[in-house]
Image (cartoon, rainbow, N blue to C red; front, side, top):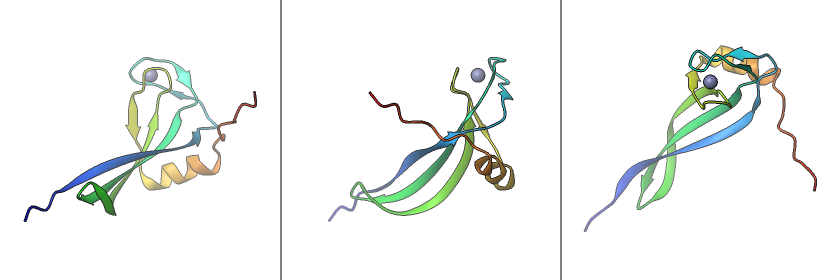
Length: 88
Ligand SMILES: [Zn+2]
């Protein structure tokens, strides 16, 4: 009997930062995207449980990701701009 185990990563977009951040890679000063990346243990390609969470801000221009600590990320979440859904 063969049991297939592995991991899978899910990225959740949580909005944009209220303050503009200067990207160290491209130099643009923009509202970065707040992301949470969760890593899940999988069995037979089915996610079973999460084992790690990473908090990142991503440059919307060049997609460079910066890791931030939990306190800084939570402070950014409180003041974030929510992405607006465009009505057609
Ligand atoms: Zn950039």
